[in-house]
Image (cartoon, rainbow, N blue to C red; front, top):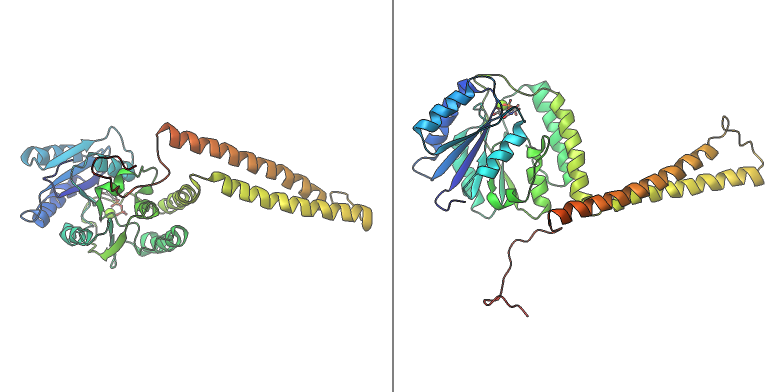
Amino acid sequence: MDKNLDISVVIPVFNEQENLENIYQQVITALQNKYSFEIIFIDDGSTDDSCKVLENIHLKDTRVRAIMFRRNFGQTAAMSAGFNHAKADVIVPLDADGQNDPEDIPALVEKLKEGYDIVSGWRKDRKDKTVTRKIPSMMANWLIGQMTGVKLHDYGCSLKAYKREVLETINLYGEMHRFIPAIASWSGAKITEMVVNHRPRVAGVAKYGLERTIKVFLDLMTVKFLGSYATKPIYIFGGLGILSGFTAVLCGLAVLHMKYISSEHLAMNRNPFLLLTAILMVTTIQLILMGLLAEMIVRTYHESQKRPIYVIRKILESPRGDSK
Ligand code: UDP
Ligand code: MG
């Protein structure tokens, strides 16, 4: 960490050679004379000349650092590398293609100072294709809001300002950078959003299509599961198990009633209840055992990394450290 730095700007790059010089200049113009800052570019295995362009920028400006990946690991991995190497207390990621406007950074950073942990950009007037981008994204934002309970208009906007401590406890996988606000708010982070400028891509091509929506949806399920049940998976598996066990008992009773009281046919082709009872009983046992296995996995996960199941904001110690 570097106390002399105000802001670390983190920029993931995948085949953006024509855009890099521009975005670099724009960040400089937006921040110089106002803040001390560093820019970290992460070259996510570009196959064009992005790497060379970054080397040149780094040579002429020591505020610029670059991390070169061996291959393409994806935007989330690139951001995560940037976060891990960032030295300032405030971290601001943004896209390399110039769609985010660095002129918005000061406002986001000032908003953080009002006591927020994350200020999330909202591309209110978004300059992307309507059918493949804006509509799926509207639906995704609504769904993420419903499922995580953290309602933001624009989860997908890369431009956000984070306090470093919020990012330190979060590990990112898949396409999960968009869920950072939700995950952080579960650990008690204060979050707000702010309208930011959005511009059309000037050069290069967009890296994603509709298939991203599916990935985001699957990630959402993982995030929701981990967020709600990471330390108590038996509640969800066991809960479903009990539900299925209860249904099994009801079906079993129906079968007994039919056989002994109303003397109905129990042949499988006419009457599903016998089969249902058997299947549901097996399912019940499976679910409960899976829940117990998950409990063991969770314990291994937390205890092997000495990960506490809580997050502390600060501790008020007595001066000599003995609080007895
Ligand atoms: N990006 C990356 N790795 C990838 C895909 C994208 O680092 O595998 C970067 C890309 O260079 C850009 C940012 O992530 O800086 C956002 O990508 P893009 O503009 O294609 O996506 P969108 O604007 O649709 O979110
Ligand atoms: Mg873009």
